[in-house]
Length: 395
Ligand code: SF4
Image (cartoon, rainbow, N blue to C red):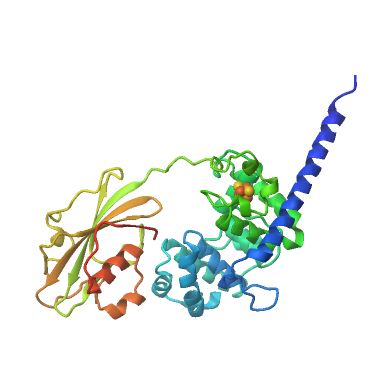
């Protein structure tokens, strides 16, 4: 009887060849589709023919990590006009960086980008490095961002895997797993595809992200318009709604934030700086008392402020208005925050105090504010009626 080893090796070689063919077909179909369908986004423009601006690419990747494209499109041109190179950002004051980031949320990324710019200036002479290991050594730059910049800007055969990409890869192979459980497999598959793409790796990687963002969406993917539908297992077997498998929900913390809008006799609003660490570190806010709450609790009705709210906040010089507070909820990555907004007035001009300041409407744009606090302060300066009970998410 013949040993079965040669037969097994033969089958493995045939499978390998089939996988290679399949990947080459994916690369071909996707790069053609992307050439036709790519959105015209400012960070995709080429200051020199055939070459993207690596700084613009790095900034956009960090902005896009946790913020919708539409919001990034609003803020990116302004940010780049203000900090057109790593050197410009490295020299900037942190407060100005946070103010320019305002509206994008998740401000830790702004601090990391600021630190990355300083590192680029100190260690790489002000030029974004090409080498993926050098890129990954920058603050805030992980495997995904390094792979995106190295492949899209510098044409290096690096893989990228984010939520969009892993969803496409798992569906193509028909694997009913969550992206977290299949993370190693996704990186291996993306690496094999990046190698198959050769000199087209940048276009291919960007096409993969674009397909996940526009066509292979989490719910109701547009398989009828997908360039990869012919070879897609999930589509063929009717599994698109089961892939990727959901990940178990993370435990969330609840918080009630009692914010007090204090108006001065001259119509100014009092703001204070948050602590340098923790949620919304170092940003500005109306004086706020935060109280932990069970995230699963229903939002209570607030008829009265917490006892001694003003003195707890060091606002003994102000008096609360009797009108009921406005409330709205805000979700961050790990918390559900219920904002309860009270209003108070000062009968006389009072000193703001340490880490506090009186601001007028003209000051708001230049202030580093998280989204919910911007909403509170803009409403305080707005003549329109207060709104109740809606929800916002992010930053
Ligand atoms: S055919 Fe459908 S499920 Fe498969 S990759 Fe395309 S859009 Fe995604």
